[in-house]
Image 1 (spheres, helix red, strand yellow):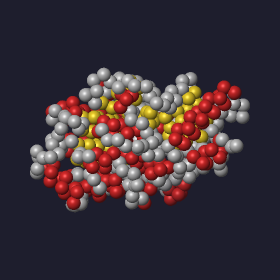
Image 2 (cartoon, helix red, strand yellow; image 1 turned 90 degrees about the horizontal axis):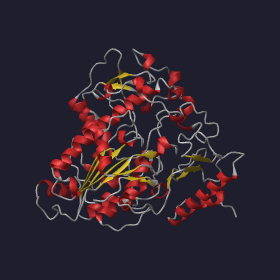
Image 3 (cartoon, helix red, strand yellow; image 1 turned 45 degrees about the horizontal axis):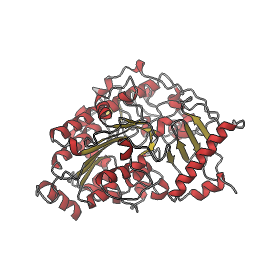
Length: 526
């Protein structure tokens, strides 16, 4: 166990009260991150189908940012930028695999700075960032591993847990094994599952695998696992245990739920809460995307099931069930805060790293700047800020979480984002737009987005790219089915595009954006 972790662990568990005892001057931080939750997968956000009473309560008690976006609609880059307050182009973490190959991040995370300033920090669930950033966490040892490895290899920890608590059972009739995440736990596939019509063996042919390998998002159905042992339950219970142990010291605790990320395999009783026939289907599911830069994105043309309005309802029901399970445990976590009398002095931040297309435009997953992928839930609650805003409609980015936490902690830092605390208190935002980026090398798709309340501009700044630009009027075209940029672009829309380009260039230039040269070369020649 690393020496600093040993010291922190002993101080927390053996030396309380100590020099690190809780003070009124230091607010606690509880960050709850879901993975791949759309902004509209909350009842109080306007969804009249999904059941999220506990998240609703949090939303009603805090400040709800209705137009929050991910800086990058893919986990590793988004999380690393959120933790450090730096653009993807600065962290260098441009893909999920970079979190594995990179051993270092040159920027300190907000948790690293909090620990330097007297906080104890623990992290539970999906990390998906460079391993050096996990060295300061004080999670107690488990299965013979210490905090950094546990946080980096959280899936391995869960595999050990399932082996110990559940084991592997013979495959039941009509069942399949999930080999993508739940390590051999069986599930009953739904018609959305690629192997659904391949029972009883569930085997795909060599040609099927060659043309389209079986991946984690291809698993759909109901998991045969007691609800006490799901990954959501385990991650929540670890968080509750941490709150109990750290109640007497200034803390930063993160509960990073894996769900509702694929495989979308809820267990009972949550899996049975939604009637498949009553599930909504996006109005854009049959969009031909003829004038859209994402026509071929995410393997869209090779995955017809995500354009099937009958099948997609099974995915939606399971997705909603996964969110409702998270909501159940959010309620348990909030109850624990209340019971420990920690609520009043704790900053609670609830958000997701990116969204889920869920059949919109006939697509799955994320990776694109369309609303369902890039727009996320964001709620901030701090009871000591009495006259807070209930709703902030100004677009903001999760890039600003870093500066926001530092603001509440009273730590002066520089970053590429802006603190959101002033918006929570009713102050006017410095910017009336938010941006997203993903300059990872695929020149056929956009790499930058700027979004205001009404307009969204999507471009590729690389001079060699043949990706078409897109401008959407979100007020009159909320499903983004009408790209206003074409060979016959109206002068008024060209004017909107140029204004947004100017704002984007200025914003990036002020922050020394590394790829600004390419941008200027393509869009501001001469």
